[in-house]
Amino acid sequence: MVTAYILLIVKPGEESTVAERLTKMDGVKDVSVVYGEYDIVAKVEKPSMEELQNFLIKNIRGIDEVERTSTMIALK
Image (tube, rainbow, N blue to C red; front, top):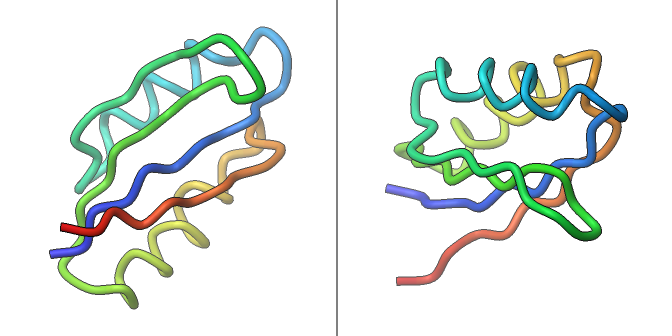
């Protein structure tokens, strides 16, 4: 299992909308709206790096309100 923390910058005022969409996605374990350089932090678990990559490209980056992402892979 691959665990990743995805940091998102979204269009102003869209934090709640994006956070709600993320919570409904398969593999998303936690979503927090935060203050600072990023707007949202999402914890995602996927069975493989390939599935994580596909999830990021098709699901996260497919959200129009998402301007930029940064992904951190957790080491266990």
